[in-house]
Amino acid sequence: MKPPKIQRWIDFLAVLLSHRYPVSQDDLIAGVPAYQLGHEKVESRRRKFERDKRDLKEFGIPIETVEDEHGNPSLYRLPAREFYLPYLALRVHGRVARPRRVGKDGYRALTELTFEPDELEAVAHAAARVRALGDPLLAEDAESAVRKLAVDLPMDAAQPDATHVAPTRTPADAEVFAELSQALRARKRVSFVYHSIGTDQSAPRTVEPLGLFFLNQHWYLAGRAPGETGLKNYRLSRISAPEMNSDKPDTPDYEIPAGFRLAEHARSRQAWELGDGDAVEAVVELRRVVGAAAAAARLGEPVEGSPDRRRFRVRRRDAFARWLLSFAGELVPVSPAEVVSDFQAVVADTLAHHSVLPSSRPPVPS
Image 1: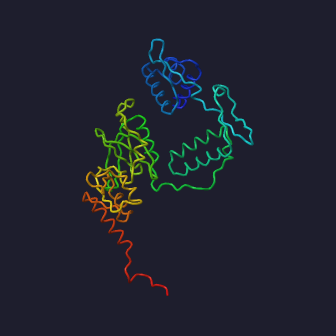
Image 2 (image 1 turned 30 degrees about the vertical axis):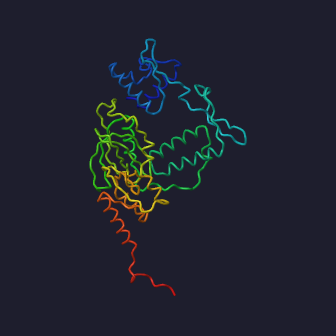
Image 3 (image 1 turned 90 degrees about the vertical axis):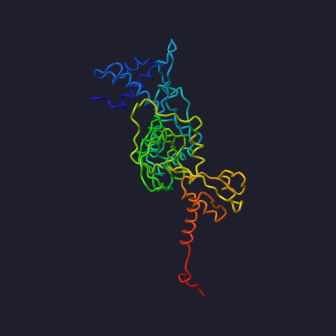
């Protein structure tokens, strides 16, 4: 019976941690029992070794590649100082309560991390908030972190209060999140079915993922179609049946653009920019450049020769029309015709919704 992959990984790490000097690939393969099962060829064992090494590094384990005496990068090592967690301790009334764990390999050389009671309580509260967001992957990570802290610290004593965080209305599916995350790590194209809010239709898409970001209570995928340079944003709750490209699993399908910064991309997004359709250029006239309207005008680009106009790139015309409506006539679209029409329709619908016929008004109390 073949041992599970987790056992193979543990044996792999045990070989690395048992040596204080770099280990060759042959020595590592010889030290992992699972590599010796059956009658696999040497090349097959090497491929399995490379897959395990890649998987472990993706988990954040700092396996280092070291050059041998001939300058070839053929040796591997895992510094215990970079792998093991430090001791965790709780300070009570000025005294440090020692952790319960007793160990000697690697731990004694590391520094100690001490929590004050209020700091530990803040950690417990933060974990509870993350679990309450409704994202199953984040909740699993929070649970895992608390279990690791509980090895040394009395996490059961740091109970969070009864405050709850309302989850998003349409949370992303955990399997969708996991598949896209794996595609991002491997830089592989991913295909999925996407339901566009603009057309209210579902269609297949193939995307090169560049990043995942959380904005306005929703997860988004920033990506581009193969062969294109323009970026689009896809809401994860509208993605179904994602499938990562399985061809050449160890070879990336694309490169992340050198100038791309996910934090900057996510920070600059407005509601009308978060769509998967082609962007249109909308020109807006400023009727009053004061207060909120003046601040909103700075989100657009100046129009040469027209100081009272601004240019916006819009993917979701409905969201853009509702945003303009909130300024009560101080910002009005002038082009293109479809944006002007959307805005006028929103104005008409709003007036109709709030209009009350005189005959239907309640009587005025005397």
